[in-house]
Image (cartoon, rainbow, N blue to C red; front, side, top):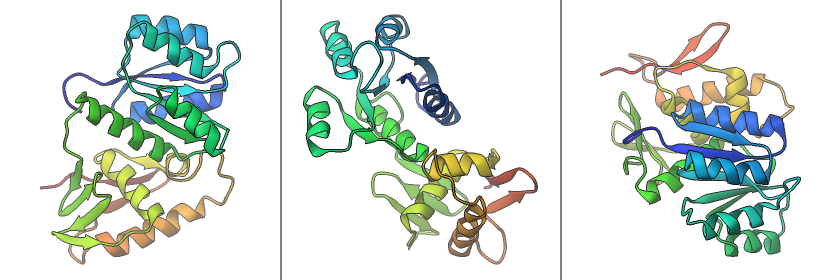
Length: 229
């Protein structure tokens, strides 16, 4: 992360979603504040001065679109990523034409939301412009949406790519199975946790070599990619 920690304001009146989103962004190295209403968001924006806002459209007091209009009138230029349960094209167009920079429908995978926030930050020059995540001989290019191993392209499924990105973003740290489910699958996913082991196994077959494993299992906790030269 370039310069000081990028600041993100998360605004959602659903406490569980706000908590999950804020935790995911902090895990990615960002400084995060949360607000549960439009009015508190307006107050926090003036004092916190976020670099990006993650803003729910349907708030209990002030509509998210109105919050954005007020912020722009006050001179706030930070990118805004709208969260909403509305999925129609008309709703998406309304949010974007109101000045939003991105539009994410609920439920969503946390890893996708984090990636979109990071893209918004790179566009503003708030973080390092390099889109490359790397460990060992594996590199992930976020802009090209491509993974290579020792310079050769590795063909991953969309889920394998999200899992790989999560592990590389947190290289050197252990990511629990619960965190993987929340980040890679949608946060309200109610399937079996065994699906994590299935995709870890598939990813290992594509990224590991006979000499050394890139992805390590930490028994009883989760998985990690150890930084190595």
